[in-house]
Amino acid sequence: MLVLRSLLFNVAYYANLILWMLVALPILLLRRSMLLVIVQLWVRSNLFLLRSIAGIHCEFRGREHIPQGGILIASKHQSVWETFALFHVFSDPCYILKRELMWIPVFGWFAAKLRMVPVDRGARSRAMKDMALAAKEQVAEGRQVAIFPEGTRRPRVLSRLTNSARPISTAR
Image (cartoon, rainbow, N blue to C red):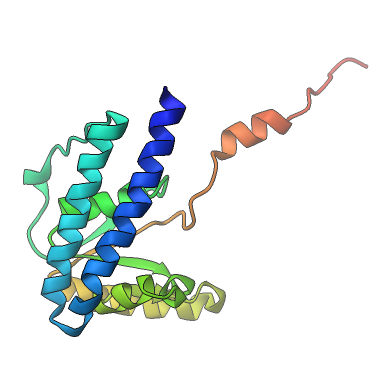
């Protein structure tokens, strides 16, 4: 049953994503604030799908402790969930993302309209300077800047290490 619900949720999630992207396409010609409204509706629909299909109830605690205005958010990047859930928690998040994501048709257009900060990871120290400057500008505008310090989603390192570890013999 778990596999079936997971499969059904994934199909619904991507169908929902495509539907909202099609709805939002004409909004690219309007103000950024209009696109933010659409993104908030998309996020709520994802949380509804999680609850109704997968039986996952998301609870956001401590929101009253989040300071108003511009802040920096460092989030562990474990799944797609936190990328849309942060839009539910913060009013106008600005993600720092790898530059290649901006090249994806439609998605990249939305990311540009929402003024996300692309980073050229190959540029090393120059990328860090550019990212810091762009993040500082966004915080000064009162936006919540979200960064995933670990970068790309990865499998758990510990389980990979323990599965490949060989016993060490101390006997001579």
